[in-house]
Length: 631
Image (cartoon, rainbow, N blue to C red):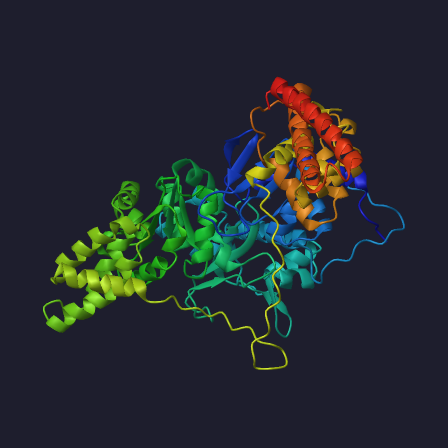
């Protein structure tokens, strides 16, 4: 039986899988100085970027949620893979041939096919569907594309294909490529009834890809009148690799343009995405088989680099009919997620981008995006259109409906201006509008969090006494400790033997004491030299999760004052650290002196006084050494 992967092969994967390249497949990173890069964390929602990557040390750490680790732990967490699956996936990407120990049982996998097999099955299926588009049975599919202005080159660009009407064509093809029925069913490509049959039959299909280009699902459109499935569009069901609330069609093609332009255009369908890209709007994406929601917004933010310091924009295109207006109001719920400004673009006569391109050409699609209007104003017009403003009661009802929208505006400095605008549009006194907006803003937010109770009684469970929280690692009191440890982890060659006399007692924060213990366990900085795996060695020597997290945090944060420290720079921090230790000892001796009677305990008093003089001299030398090193 195949054994565990050899440690040296895992180390080679860590070395060759550049963490900045891997993370960039999921997060837009920007230079942050000191060799670090920043982006929006993929593991929690945040307005400003606190996710850091240090390519030199092969570490990532989020200062917002505290998560961190190396390239393997990142892929494990972001894709939900096991350790072995992650190493295998990265090894394939960077060209490392994995070897396994003989006679050692392989680590157990979770039940179900591995992610890599599901992705590979989709790759084979996409190639099969694309080939079938040229078949005689796909005449209607090709006509559909031609009528919408898409030629063969466009179909190839987007990977569009045709699912044969034969209900087992793909099933047989995948079996021929040695995929098991368990794998193809788990992938959502094959369904199981009386027998196994193709999930998509007789339909035009679009591959739905992750940002890195991997196909993880399909969207399929009905093109034959006798199609027994009534739904116009049929999409891949939820699988281990496909989560419709987190997938955006076209993200693989749009991600670079979104990053460069700080813009995203959200359309409603696959053909709309195609039309926009072919017309030159290369930031277009669409949700897949579900309404655009908060999770989709978070995906966009990561790839746009959308945070408070940017002036980006997210533009939604909708049909002008009631369904389109309803969709716009739904989008308004996720508007608060964005730091960028949000807009709506509605084509004349309710045409979508695909129809607009057919009728008026590429320029009209670009003009549609350019004529966008603020989402807030579109929503306000939508609300007021539902009321008869010629009637007094209609105006009051309109005000009540619109006040909540005005109160929800993200930029509170604009509430007064929008209140004036609403007053003018509704025809009511400004003070009356202000009052209704204040009432809307003061309504308590609804919460669905259940009250916690004891398991054996209806009475609330008694609260446990709170544990004393440790101070923040970024507290200025620990700045010297923090900076020295950053030097030790990031630049061990520049530290060398300068820390020979440093001990755990020189650190006052318990977590930093744990970090130093891990450094010592790993052999100390003098043993690291130029070893690129030094930081991982230190991390592997730690057992406390808080210490492990601190090591990754210290491994990505830039060192103050220099990007290339040398022993002279490092020794200054050692002197400052030991000066602080000496100052604490001086304070202890002074406290004992104050409690000692110099007449009754003259011997102890004189001994402590002599110790105090020696400590003061030692502290003076350390301070001079620190100044000489300019720490």
